[in-house]
Length: 183
Image 1: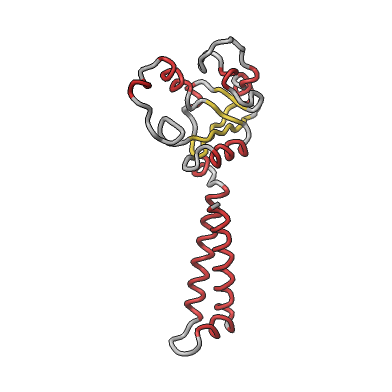
Image 2: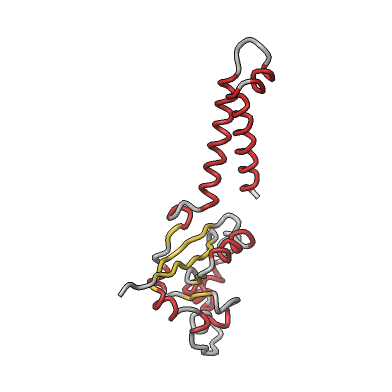
């Protein structure tokens, strides 16, 4: 019997706060903070778009991570399936801290620690598109320079030769792609 695997994603920022600023030492000593740290890194979603939303809106300098889990096991940790204990701490009652219990998973540390970088693990769409944009810009510059001669009209050489026109086209396509991806 083949087990179905589900890919779960999470957005992760830098440091131990949203802005990457460490918490003061007196805060780190509180039981609530320590339990929050214990629960951190364990929230996942099965929706890549949701993880991308967190990167765009909450952790702009963060990254998306993923973990592959057998679906049968993952379903045990879907927040909507967890027992509602009524506790006031995340580790005791993840349901009370969930925004979307049907989409979120609160994984045990052993599974959550298997997370990998999504952009490196599968090259990420944005990462790959950025590389192609830079390739087009570079190709455009090379073709443009190749079409120039030491004597003569630069504009005429760029617009009247095939390599010059291709250079302009590649450069524009690459630049537009680059600018769209930087948003």
